[in-house]
Image (cartoon, rainbow, N blue to C red):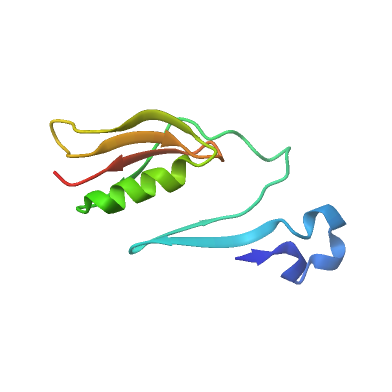
Length: 104
């Protein structure tokens, strides 16, 4: 994770932006996601998609669902479905919707 304060453009930014994130990576197993903070005039609430996290480990599915749901909104609690032993949908604290799919 890199803050704006740690970037070459730090001196040209207002103080309130120096602790915001200019670049961050999150690695979940072998998948890497990248992101950054945006100004309020650039930001649009995410909509129209889900990120699917699939695992063949029941405990991992429960752990990921639990962590993502902190300060978020559970749309569908983890439950057994005809295709999975655990499946749930949660919106994280940033408004990103996740589908968690456990082992078949």
